[in-house]
Image 1 (cartoon, rainbow, N blue to C red):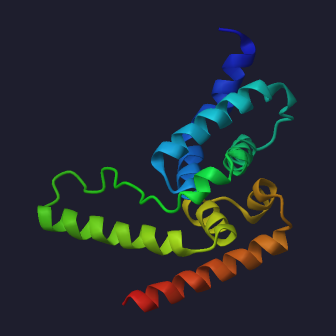
Image 2: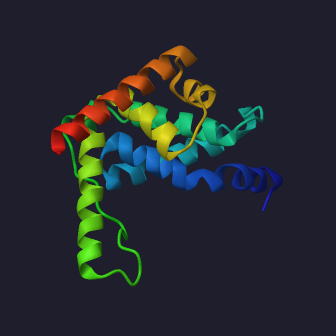
Length: 166
């Protein structure tokens, strides 16, 4: 294995779960997310020589976001595809607990899916990927103030959606 490949694997592969998570939320489809991540990893490997160092996670998630954007409007025209529940129940949980947890997760997924794209994106990056405002700004290509504003609006819309569901 050559040195370039080893360096790429060391820096990019630890962030595959984050890449898939972002792709899944953006595309709203596990199958499309797989394709996006595969394309993003290929692009990242091809462009790895241009990576100047710094935050590999932000760099990779920027590529994932760009791959999703360039995937075309055909995918987005299909509309919302529910996100599949994946191993939601903890081992040993009773059937009732598992059903309650699965129901709560579906409601959460539905509320997040209702958010406009630019709000959903920053909310996922901040709350689920625990990225800083600066990293989100770098990924989305927007000023930090815009990230902060979108995050505040996303949280407000999310709270309102949650109140409406109760």
